[in-house]
Image (cartoon, rainbow, N blue to C red; front, side, top):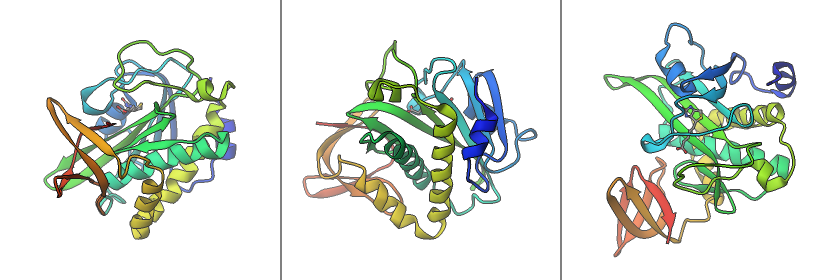
Length: 257
Ligand code: BTN
């Protein structure tokens, strides 16, 4: 069970999480918040599900998470505050929020993998999927879907990256309510920062990404490209250096060579 009272006591935000919807089972929290325009209207609305039947991952993968043990939720952003926000920046900021909450509470070292994975010792503890509805050239609604493995002790199936959970890493039970509140508290501060100081958020992301400067491979479907992870550009795209040329990468899975 998830205690809303306990969560609320720790929540210090103005907007994010102030409208909170809890459900036992749903196909996907992203799909629900994105598609049901009449029901969900407020920016900052959180939909948390104990179990997703069709949890979605990046690049058409699935997101598997055991019922009631972890956090699977989405944050809604509607067009009132959306006009200026860059989706890449949202991706980077969200991964910083999850990583910072882990470091603050559990003294574990985290590492960020472009564009938004959070790793502990090379294993994935959290994944983020941002989806939008765009009409013409205007973004109508955006959802930030976040999956964080907290108390799951075993993972079965095929994973593109080995998974882990905070319980596996710390050997102790993780308090879901406190942890979620902490992630949202940090997330809101970062979102406000994105409005006028986005480059300082990108700088924070760089400081948590050990892959910059190293040799990487980027896989996009059947295509792979290798080179040096030179940097991220001001828009949050990855810059790959190869034979003296810099290429801007928009999508793909990064792995270290
Ligand atoms: C990835 O790393 O592939 C992204 C995983 C994103 C999973 C979250 S769980 C909550 C939200 N609802 C979904 O269907 N997916 C995201």
